[in-house]
Every structure is written in structure tokens, then in C-alpha cells.
Image (cartoon, rainbow over all chains, first blue to last red; front, side, top):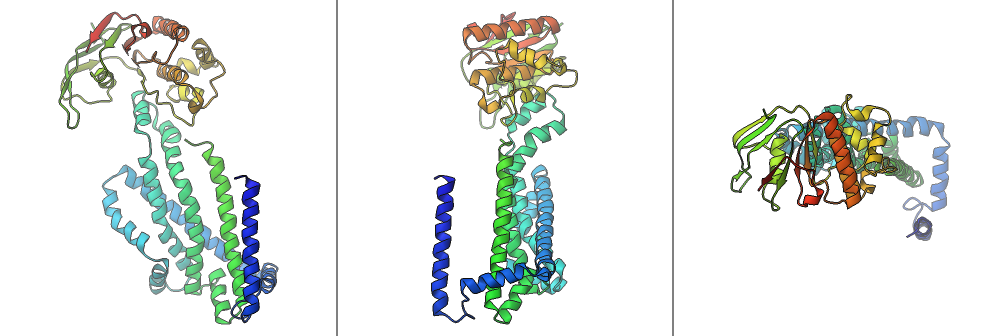
Length: 249
Length: 194
């Protein structure tokens, strides 16, 4: 399928969704389901409000970045370490399994009990939930290093910095790229969830307030902002990944 | 006095019977050809001589300082160019670190204009020659060649043999080679049958 055809199909799908939404909005109370035009108005009002952009949107973005960055650094470092020191794998296995199977909401509730409803809670929640994703990816990346190439480098006594640059790093990067995309998108979801439950400001807190005061048009507008964040992030990372893939095995 | 001497080497593989390898003696500048059917242990012997495979018993004395190994399966790094693959192993003292030397070597082996192609874009024969140049990039005093002429035509093999002849004459490089086809084999001082 050509790119133009894909865009046309996506646009058709979006238009159908909007038409269905408009139709349903005529059937229900605006508090239950606001119309697309009311939601659009609320969205424009939000995006034109400097207080929202600086006081609500920016803190959420910074928390997402902090949470994903911490998860990436910690998870990758532990994954590489466990790849090099195999005895660490069974030691870390129960922790990884617990974190990967625990629902995000449960972790956030526990963190709220332990650390209180602070900004740090949302960052810690995202980093703890996502770290196992990067841990597994780094471990898989190291396992994917071609032993025949390592043998070739060993027999020719190639310095270790060259082996890391040319053989190990590309193999790890290939495994890390999908994890970064998944991790970043999940980082948004977990951070917003933590903000909703913690009430510590940000987009999630604003969503909780809109729900509480039945400002459904604002609620829908906020959801569109969150979806927009995911789309922008996915597109940006997708572009970076495709560029890097060209230079990797 | 030989620089390389292997006596009574026995290797063992998981779940397999121990394999007794033939004795080897090799002097500086010497050349040995290993012949025998597939699976008889020729590549195993090369790997033991290269220090890549441990042996269970026997003795191995290796006084060669730098080993170059042209592998049968090439082992080029797929995302690097042919030139980068050759320079990957090259130490600072490598003859290929002299400006223009890599291009001259590529030219000599009929690889002109292929130096900047990715390893994955090379044909089997081209990859084999890049593999050979990489082994030579360490300026080896012992060169291990595993079927390097398998994918070459007569003309290309002529180039390879001439190039290796010149390198060996200059550096007194000893060679242990595997070749099923006697026409794709450097003239050996000794042959070992498996």
C-alpha cells in the first residue's frame, strides 16, 4: 500500500469516527457526551491558555521525560550488567516478574502510601513500571551479539573499545529501539494515571478535576491532548528509529 | 627449529567422541595444506592453532606473535563497509594504515570500487577477499586460511595467489590452509591428510 493510500484510509477512519461521535452527541446529554464542536472549542481554549500550557502541560511533559529517562538509564544499566554477570539474572528475576505483572494503578497506590501525593511519586511510578522493559531489551540485545564476530575480534586482538563500538553497541541498539518506542508511549500512560490518582498537578490531575466537576467537554479536550502527546512522541521516535535502522545490522 | 609445534592434540566436543588431530610443525615463512573430507577436523585444527578452541590433551607450542584468520564463513560485520571491515582489526602498525594502502590492496584483489560498499552488498567471492584482507591487516606472521578460494574463478584466484605470494615474501608469513580444491591452494611445503 502506498503512503498516500494509507493516509487516505486513516483520514477516512477519523472522519467516520467524528461522524459517529456527532450523531451520538445529538442523542445524549452534553454532560454525558459533548459534541465534537464543543470539545474543539474547549481544546482551543486550553491550548490558548498560557496557564494551562506552563502550569499543567509542561509539568506533565517534564515528569514523563524524567520517568522514561530514569527507567531507560536504570533498566539498561541493570540489563547490561545482568548480561555480563549471569548470576544476576536469577537474582533479578522475581523483581522483574513482579513489576512486569503488577498493574500500574496498584503500584501507584502503593507509592502514594509510601511517598505521598508528590511530583516525585509520578516520576518514580513511571520509572519503576518501565525499567523492566528496558532491562529485558538490554539483556536481549547482549544475547543477540554475534559470537562469531566476537571470536573474529578476539583472534585478531582487536581492542575492546572497537569491539564495543562495532559489534556490541549495534546489537544492543537494535533490541533497544522498539523498547524505547514502547517505553515512551507507556511512560505517558503511567504518568497520567499516577497524576490522576496522586492529584499532584499536571494533565492527570486536571482530568480528575474535569471529571469531578462534570466538565466533560474539557475532559474530552484533555484526552485529545494526551493522545496528541502520544502521537507526537510516536512519530518523532519512529522517525529517529527509521534513521538509525539504516545504520544498524 | 619450528615456530609452531602441535603434538598429540585431542579435542572433545559436548556429547561427541574425542577427536585426535594430526601433528603439525611449521617454520616462519612455511606453508602447510590440510586435506580431507568435510567434518574430518581441519577447521577444528585451525581453531585450536588460533587459540579459539581448547584441547583436552597433547601439547601446543606457538611462537608466532600475530595471527590472521580468514574464516570460511567470512564473518564480516554486516553494517560496516568493506574498508571499515578491513580496518576493524588493523592495529596502528598495520600496513593498511598507510594512506592509500587499503585502496591499493582492494585494487590488487580485483575489488576496486567495492571498498565503500556495505558487507551485505558484496558477493560471496568479494566478501571472502575482504575477509582475507582483514586477516592480513594485522600483519600476521601466521596466516590461517579456511577455504578462501572456494568462491573464486581462475582469474581471481590468480590475483589472490599473487598478492599472498608478495605479502609472504615480504613478511615471511607462515600459512596453514584448508582447500578442498588443489587448484585453489597456495603451493605448500607439506600436506597433512585427515
